[in-house]
Image (cartoon, rainbow, N blue to C red; front, top):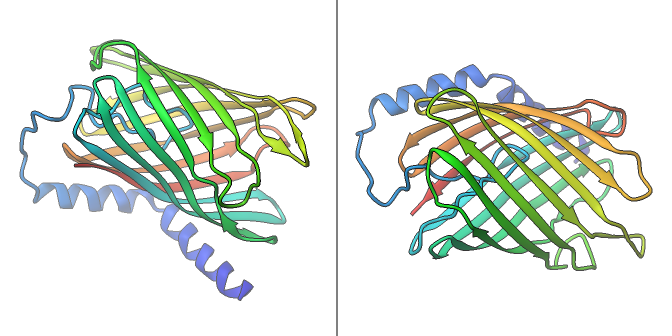
Length: 263
């Protein structure tokens, strides 16, 4: 069984290692897709919360739903790796500037170690600035995990999310997250700041970002990631992401790909 899992992972790595093939495929598909204006899509786009470290401050318009998901492979160290299938984020436009969300990473296959389903998280996002493509945008995100998977405790979390849209050129964004998880019967505060820059190029956008994880009683973790998104049509976006640890306490390498679909 373990050999089979390693074989599956090798195939995933071969696929992820060829982002140029993904770009070519998207361009071929898009060449045959009709260009249609969609009045229900806000000027700032789909406001996707994947694939980078930081969420978007945008909210889903009232009456719409948005599903985000993907697959992620992580090499934790030379002897440990993890494959996550799902990464689902189900977002519902509740009211103007307010959305209800259910975040669930799905199935996590660790090697070596036990595999299990992740805990889902129930979340509410409140955007307290206008939803626009140009200018400063900010939002607050509150979250509670539900211990139905690999944990027996509820985890509260609060996020401050921001971005700045410019008429042209790089567009900065970032988050400041505070978590209070339970590990081995003890709760410790975890602070996670992130800072990134997006480079939009029409339907394509490239990004690079930094993430720090500062946990009480533990060494800090520093990571970077980068990748691209491609807006296939006004309601569908595809993405690919690569991540690297920049200190010994971080994961060695990560790669993921996924989608965003709005209805």
